[in-house]
Length: 225
Image 1: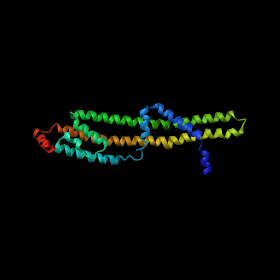
Image 2 (image 1 turned 60 degrees about the horizontal axis):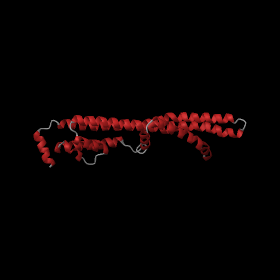
Image 3 (image 1 turned 135 degrees about the vertical axis):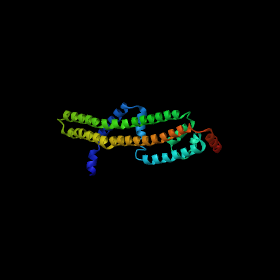
Image 4 (image 1 turned 180 degrees about the horizontal axis):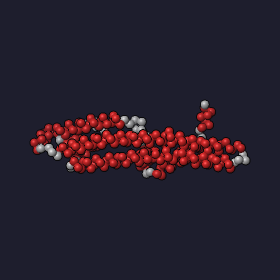
């Protein structure tokens, strides 16, 4: 078993496939996309979209309660909110109008989606490039094998390089880069859904604020003080 594992490990073939895949993927995106693709590995298994959505709903309800009691200008007084809801609450408190908040919300969601897509695209590109890099290694190995037909001792290593690069390329594509890209895409979609839901409720809160009467505003001001 260990002997078979040792035979399947070839540093040169591994370097050819992984190095070529990394170079090809990096050339398809920006430096920022590459950094985000690597940074996305940390929350890849730790992300909990359902828990984040539930926490966001609690925070939004707290913001609605604060706005009802003290006015929307105090929305940033929310406690325990996550980074996204906290940022939205600060923007809501400072927004000149509901339309101003709606424009910010749409742009924020679109920018975040674009950043996620850039990171996902790097892993998707890696999944596409890895088999091709494996085939390049296979061609190199075959060339080396046919060039040394007069020396049987060199045929084995060349054939191993030809086969192992194909194996590495397929494994990296099907078992590493492809699943990572798919999971990142699903996590991004799930996050976008609960964020859009939270922003829609906050936008509705901002629009409701425009209909507050002077008497209600004075009562809220008194509570805030």
